[in-house]
Length: 222
Image (cartoon, rainbow, N blue to C red; front, side, top):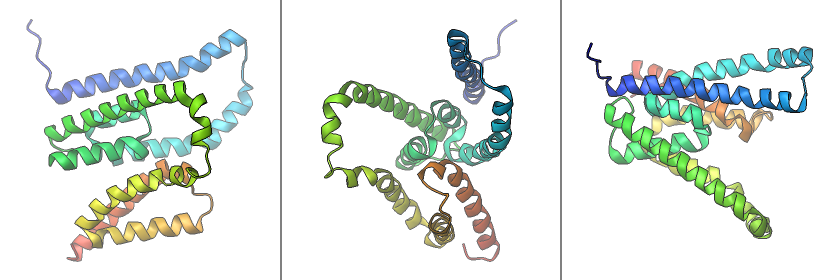
């Protein structure tokens, strides 16, 4: 019987699911290997209590991120981002900028391809930079820890997102006001929120913006 050739999107979902399963197995295999090699078994009661306290939050975030990132990155970009990580800080800006320059959307097949290529290149470049960093970290440590450079390193992410923000805010200033005010209020008046919670707050901001956009559209403000 002649095999039916898969479409691009079908191959994306097939490979994405397969690699997702492989990565999940590898992530679980590492602690399992350490347990076997060093005969170090965790205290199961404490482990279960810790999971009960923290896992639901990550389940919720994981579900929200799927609905948030897929429309922005496309299916292929989302699979690759979830495997390689660092989505909000690196993969998302790279993919959005690449699609913006190409004049395509993630919902189009062209956008799918552009987004996936951008995220793949970003992952490769990040890996190469990490390799160079590991090799050069000792000789460069005195330079990198110089007090004169400390303010610059603290502003890398704000500068990255600021540059992207200007582009998107300028497209629809009215729509951007509400999420900007929300995030300012949350990060100023809720001390628990910090740089480590960015991954959680991005989906929150997206859902809030969608809700506000719908309300404004119904009222004829957009």
